[in-house]
Amino acid sequence: MTCLHGRHIQPLLLAGLNGSNWRLADYAGRGGYAVFERILTEGVPPEAIIAEITTSSLRGRGGAAFPTGLKWGFMPRDYAGQKYLICNADESEPGSFKDKDILRYNPHAIIEGMLIAAYAMGASVGYNYIHGEIWAEYERFEEAIEEARAAGFVGQNLLGTAFSFELHAFHGFGAYVCGEETALLESMEGKRGQPRFRPPFPATRGLYGQPTTVNNVETLAYVPFILKMGGKAYADLGRANNGGMKIFSVSGDVVSPGNYEVPMGTPFSELLKMAGGMRDGKQIKAVIPGGASSPVVPGPLMMQTAMDYDSLLEAGSMLGSGGVIVLNETRCMVAALLRLAYFFYDESCGQCTPCREGTGWMYRIIQRMEQGQGRPEDMDLLDSVAANIQGRTICALGDAAAMPVRSFLKHFRGEFEHHITYRQCLVFG
Ligand code: L3W
Ligand code: SF4
Image (cartoon, rainbow, N blue to C red; front, top):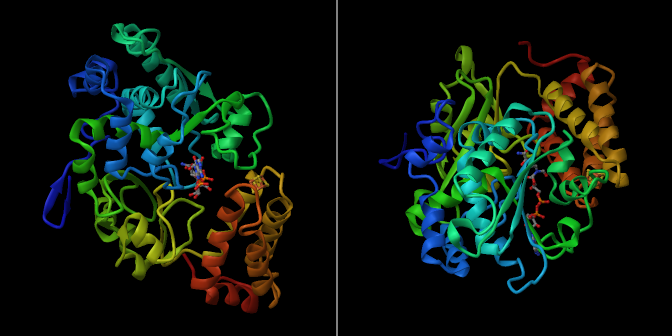
């Protein structure tokens, strides 16, 4: 339970889950599938569902924060051909591990969310694209689909209506870039997982050229809760323009790393308390608040910041996927950045020159600084390489690689200079 401005707010998606109550009977016991049944039996108009999602102010929880109701509204209504709905469970951003827990503990919330979304957009086939490096979650989701099918929630003419929905689990290929929606579509079509130019956006030309919506796991899993409580009530859990609840994956130098579901606008200091505070009584130095692609924020500023889209933008960062990495006073920021830089270098698909070459340059410059072989001009060189990647690539991975670099240099320049001048670390763990 979170206490926010005197209000006590229970988690929605993760409430009461213990790993053994994920089955359909457990979910139904918590009121699951009742919303979908009501929608079908009452014949609720699809437009009314999209309007409710718009009112809820739900925004994409995978990182881009695009308004979900608006995205659903982009799907052509009177399209005679096949439309698809895809759940993006390709979670692999360093620091983000919330979707895995939803898959593990509440797979039927994802399925019910997909059913409602598919009904609202007129999609009759859905896929859950699950990251290729996780097996247990994939198998669990397959089991959950079979349970839903046996109960009459997946298949043809559901609950005796004209609505049909076939749902499949799709095991991905373990590449970070396949979480980018068009690379995901390419990989599903059996091609190399490389992002496509947009536009056209998937709502116009998606899987096999058909209108497709791709939504993150957490986004879809909140849908049944929103329609149960009403869009306005969900929005009011958070704050204006930052409605509802959010799961934050808290990791790093805290006592109890894990997933914490809190209302948008919860102060970071409270989230840190929920995670048990700083480990070993150390001081907070910095926080990467929205997964590896979000700019780093100095600890003292973070302690004054709330966990929502607008507050994190004001703090010079972003909410991203909600992967909160906490670093204490003993962490070397050059070494921390080196780890991030290697990740993006390794995961670049190589399609655009600034990203393919630039991520390698950044990695090698930071590596020589970290190893005590940095040159005075390296600071400016690093910033200029990052600046030349930003905004010049096909997908967001280029920006994601550049933004952390620039923010580390901005806030922790002294540590980089120390590495270059004295050929060693400023801090000792
Ligand atoms: C139709 C338009 N559709 C936008 C749709 C678009 C997409 C969504 C957002 O993600 C983020 C980055 C990191 N007509 C449209 C339209 N859409 N305009 O809206 O699109 P966009 O372009 O804002 O973002 P994006 O490229 O889809 C980039 C995050 O993703 N990221 C890492 C994420 C990692 C995880 C994880 O591992 N858990 O989520 C890396 O870049 O935050 O901001 O659907 O089609 N005019
Ligand atoms: Fe590939 Fe990087 Fe270009 Fe994205 S930005 S398409 S990952 S090379």
